[in-house]
Image (cartoon, rainbow, N blue to C red; front, top):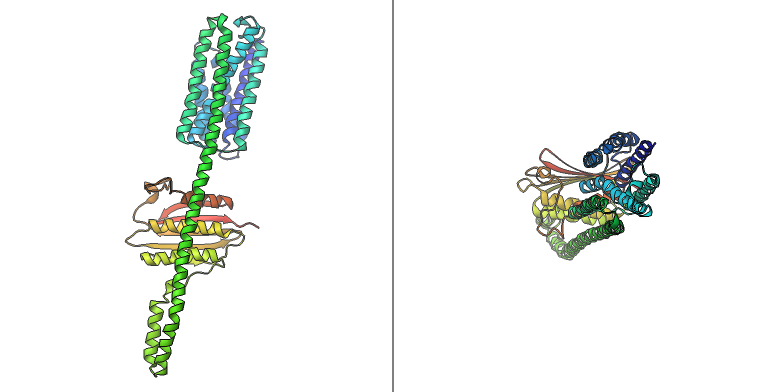
Length: 429
């Protein structure tokens, strides 16, 4: 009977292990998720039910449980590397202190008779019930906090939290082994176990605050980058407006000069003069694109003008208007895409191609630029190469965020000496 109770408790504990991994990280794909959970549950149950019961294999079984959860997290679950490591270690490291605290409490109730709370003891069933119940509710609280607000820790912060869990685990294990031989000091050990548990709770709260600060700082930097982009665009628009205003002012004198040549019966000279004005002052670069949005037109026309200034051949093919998509979002998106293309252009053969089209309910944007070497091989994450990392490097992040806002996708690739950025945006109804 005792063996059956212990086995049931171990099986329940394995269920909680799988539950916290799935709830905290989530599956990469929802397909066959129950089968994936069963696949990891079976080896966990075998190790926890059978191997843990063999004398001398307790520590080995713990490491095997950690290894199984770690492999499961990396194969089937989503999340960052540090998150997967932490969530694989967290169940075991959380369960042990809870078990120790519950056993210490019931041991005190039994006048420090530890045999009463060990397997076969009269208080073993309530010990198992309370320890598993507390463990389950602790895991559920962690999952609920995770679902309420997603935060991202840096690698250093994940290492810090994981190290504290490991240290707490080792301390609790050592103290439990010492307390076995010193029953008269069990109240003191209980206080120590409670302090260790409190320390881990406080650590989790501190990490949550750090997560919130991280995401706030990221949002601030992204917003600052977008504002900087808009300020740059405003300067370019003012410069272009000034050029147009100057051209308008000078055009009066050009026309008067042409009229005088015509009145002097010099039509050939007048024609040559007008052609020279057209070639020099009204060149093709000033004939911009027209998407139906003044904001988007300003972005595209200024980037076209910038390309002409830098000697970059730019081809535009736009056969759609941005219906039901915020002009500011599109202007930031196109500005970042074209700025990256201009910076990454091959100087020996600079070339940029912009394609914007509509495919059913989706808006397709493609930006291609010539490159001298593979960008994705040298920089697969497309991190900024500027010296001041705090002020730059948010262009790609901004592009991804805007695509996500419209349930779209972003893909970067290379083909035939060209770097290609493809964005799909779903147009809202």
